[in-house]
Length: 231
Image (cartoon, rainbow, N blue to C red; front, side):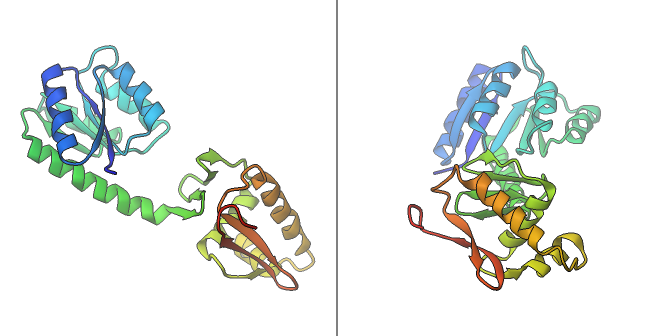
């Protein structure tokens, strides 16, 4: 299934044309005709990319972008009838990924969309780790199961990240201490057991999570993928 686009444009004919064009190109498309509706649809649907007109009723495109960037790094391509450099700089400095000036051809915009998506996917691969239903965002220092944020302490996150970066590899308690603190704290190895137990407890609400932190008795811990529904 194709990437999901949110097209935000108040000119009905242009909006309809863009929707039809991108559907024909294999994309999924949702649309908004004003800024407030755009923010609502973004929150509800989490699109892969937003095509955002600057001149919008209710909320301008700049205001929409400002709201989105407080929470999300979704790629945004801005559309404008203004070619002034100040508008371009304003949009790009606020986090727009590209800028297209009207009038434009659908083919040109499609090329821009594909280019931005490729860059975004390459970036995501570098800082997102996935195992089963577990997803770790290294940049945001957040972990999710089934898209639900896990309330982890910094130490719990670091342990989980270490295991996720090395699936199937067994780490001793001392190795974990050294990796997350930068030094070996002999005599404190058992604190790792407490952190692991806390991690497991926080994951108990997700029995079908598709991974588990296993104890290798006499050695340490590792994270492994497992068949959903099987222990």
